Length: 418
Ligand code: SF4
Image 1 (cartoon, helix red, strand yellow):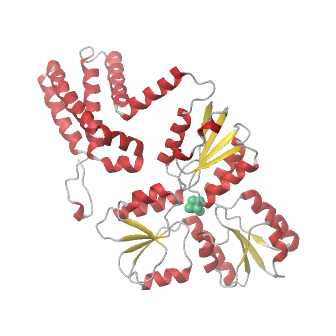
Image 2 (cartoon, helix red, strand yellow):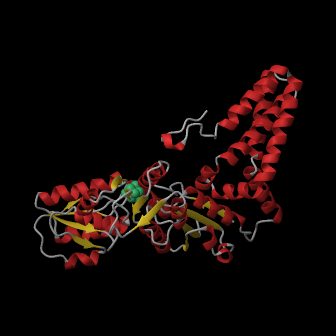
Image 3 (cartoon, protein in one colour):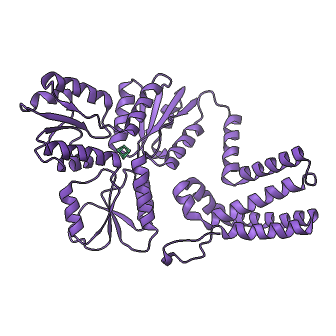
């Protein structure tokens, strides 16, 4: 069994920007922080954010203090005004691509044009876009809807940024037929375009497709529809626990992609789980090797071995050092520093690599003991090389450990790290 990961899988620019803005706010001491609706359609990320004091709300009634984040979808201008006057501090994470559509709608409807929006009923981005129209806006989803439009003299068309391009093209053909002078703005964003294109081209190379992303995420659902339409066995999963392993084990080549709001670690977890499925031709030896590699990476032994190899190559090429002593020293130092830093900066792992965080939590005593032993043995090895080497190692070890310790309190709003 082969697994192919789409190049475009993962956060788009707009979602990454919104999450970064929320995380920046959550690191400040002013609380509470709300997001107007879930910042992304991903329960796991929302749980992590809740643990940092960021809560998603839909009902604004009675809210007067704290900060409120407008997510990438944007909001209607009336709601923005209401929030501004409510006493809440506004953090605007509306995606610049969505702002562009809002601006087009406002500017052309002011000039007297009617707007037709190709988008999903009740989608937050569409609700926001409709609010920018200074005339009644017409919302359609399919080419058949064009016949239901009233007779319009001057009109223009925009799309919700995550619409299916093929459907949009079909709608445009139908509109042009009925209203030849229509101005068309294809506002489907580049991130959406690339993801959809990649699914279409992968459809020729794989026999099934796993799409990772929230069940309520519009752009993820669109990828599912495209894969399905292409005749692939399609699996929409939110996490690795949703995989239908029995059916996947029957596949030869599995494609994996993800919605624009799916974190990389979630995709990685799904990839690892699929790779762990014993395909019809995978041997036990192959699976054992895969698990061994995983253990070496999670335990930091792989990175330490890399340091050993690098130091060995340098001393062999330039004929410096004393045999294997420097490479051994590099192995011990890098191993110990990685173990200590991962233990001290657990939150980074929780957000970037939950699997590693869980591994560290389970084995932290044992790993830290190994780290202490590594640094102690490193001191002896350094002393065998020379006394100044031992002093240098001692100083570097201190610097390495302090790297993850904030030495200015959080209240000062910024951290200085050695
Ligand atoms: S899908 Fe496009 S428009 Fe939507 S948030 Fe991402 S980059 Fe912005």
